[in-house]
Length: 229
Image 1: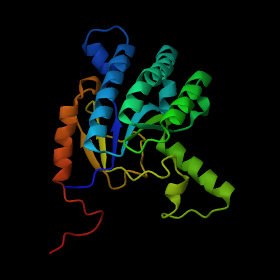
Image 2: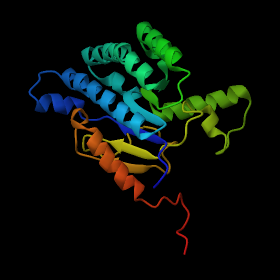
Image 3: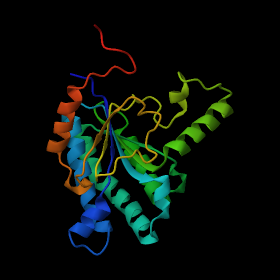
Image 4: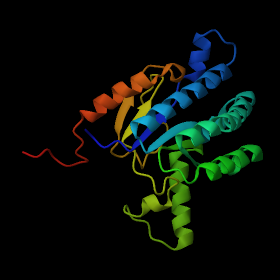
């Protein structure tokens, strides 16, 4: 059985799910997708995963219609307000990665409050990637290192990334049928096992995730080495 510390998920397919269900607006898919976040978080916590990183809003998502962006910002605020009880009951620590400076002030306040309330927990850490793009993260990391007067190396790069202190990604999952990383955790996923599913995010279940974990556990992970003879 492979060590599974960090699962990252690109939650794709909310808009297509809404259209498939006959809804006039894509936002219904985001609303339903938020419910899956709760189910997957509980499953990951019970399984013993240490980090669950979810791609909630990318640096490219600002190109979407204003009404959809406004809805997503409001939805994330409501999600954190409603899920605080879940975090507290299950001792889930909450964190974020990404540049939060462009977010509405009320959402930034909600994020800070949720982090503060869950900071002492040592079980699962749920990480929301908000206004996140891996290229942007790497550029910001280089700036941090320069400001600190540190010469970057492969060994110390992690210290300057948004994910500092977190293990590299073991499993990276993308729902919705597309097979690309879309600027998500490029450095941290160098040796992750990739899983792609046609299932749209609102239809993704803990049972499907469990099946992926079973496959993950059967993979011989060599990290660039060779199999012992």
